[in-house]
Image 1 (cartoon, rainbow, N blue to C red):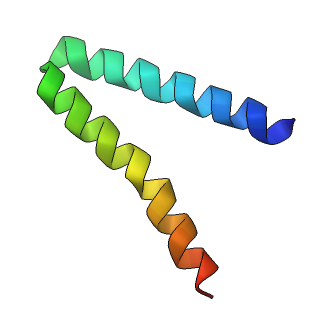
Image 2 (image 1 turned 135 degrees about the vertical axis):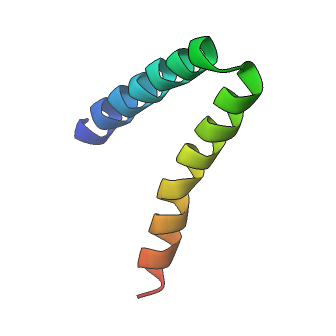
Length: 51
């Protein structure tokens, strides 16, 4: 249950960040930054599994 809550809060935070970037810059910039930010945890988890 704790992981579900943490995931929901993380997605809400990323959504707020994307909305702010969309208002400040452009849709393209917001989508690129969000894509990069969503890939970072995946890369970290893959690297930590290899140990």
